Image (cartoon, rainbow, N blue to C red; front, side):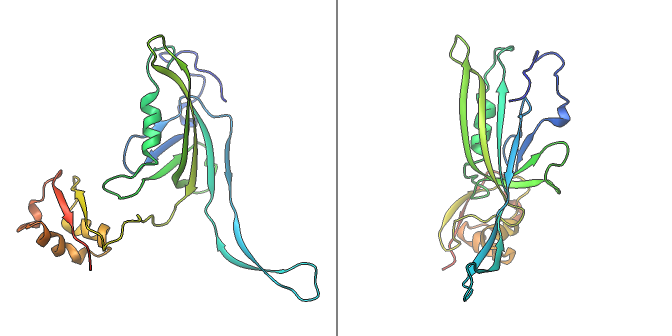
Length: 218
C-alpha cells in the first residue's frame, strides 16, 4: 500500500493528480485517499485450435478480442479526523448494483495521472471486496481497504431486461418519452406506446420523478 496520510487537514504527501478516481455514470465519484502501490490489468485474446495433420501442434485461428480486466486495491483513512469511511465503501458497492434508470450497474471511468492504459479505461465493476481495518471507540469504521475488479466496457452495455417484459421506470431530469423509448426499446418512435400506457396527453409535461409503466412489446 502507498504512504500514509500525515494529516487529513494538512498537506498530503501525494499530488492529488496522482490519486486514482472511479467515476460512475450515476452515483458518487470515489477518490482513493492514499495511492495504491500497484494496479494490475490483463488482456486475453481468443484463439481457436485447428487440428494440423502429421504435426505435434495445431494451427491457430483468431476468434475475437476479449475485454481488458483490471484489479486495484484502494485505501481509505479518516482516523485522524475521527470520521467514517463507510460512505466511500458504500459508493463503491453501488457501482456493482443495478441502477433503476439504467436497468444495469453503471459504467465506470477509471482515471489515473500518467494514462496507464492508452486512451483511458472505461469499464464495469465485476467485484467489490471491502475490509474494515480500524474502528473508533464508538464502533465507527475509520480505515478500510477495498479491492475492486473491473472489466473493460468501451462499447455498448445493455441490461438483461427484455423489452417484452413490463417494468416501472422513474423519469429523471432531462429525460423525454422519446429518450426513454430509445433506452427501453432502442427506438424513439415507440414513445407513443409509453404515452398510451400511462394516459399521457402531452409528452412535454412529463415531470422528473414521475413513475411510468413501460409496457412490453408483444
